[in-house]
Length: 200
Image 1 (cartoon, one colour):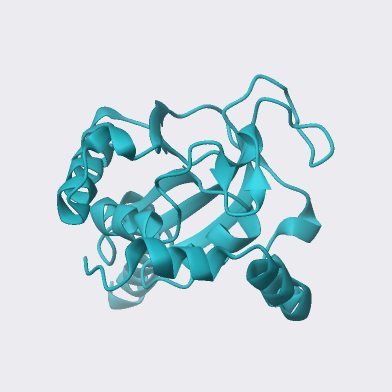
Image 2: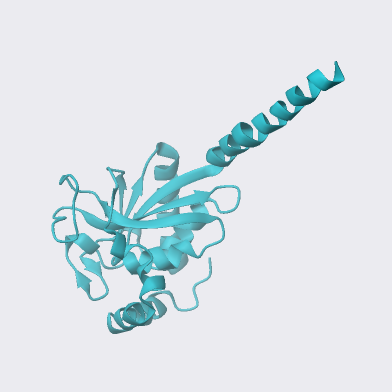
């Protein structure tokens, strides 16, 4: 009888490891989509946060199916962030998003101009939408400016299309080119000017 129960117990343990644990991990994982100028930069800024599982560069917001870097008219360059909500909340992720963009520029970001580079928070449900609106109001209050001076749009999510492989982890794979681009585009200087000593 004992010999018969032993494999049953082992199977039960394996079931817990292989089935229950991954389901818990998936339940804790959420996604957020942000547009904030060049996706190389926003991806790099967000993927290093504790609790972020992955950050992928891509396109969203437009109608073209299977957009490419050469043909994504109507889409914005975006970053899809998968995060563990037990470690970093959506609210905290929003706070990090804001201080990595220029919220006063609705026509692009830094040296990148046009619709592809507009700052947008894409929300996938009512909870995200409410939190995004609350974050915008909080930033407005913190910076002591009217809400309508913040040019970041809050829109319902549309399909996310992952960008070409060479765009993924660009900052890590091409540090010299990335740092030159980021510096020459004036991103960090503008962020320092906009946010100064701002604290979350």
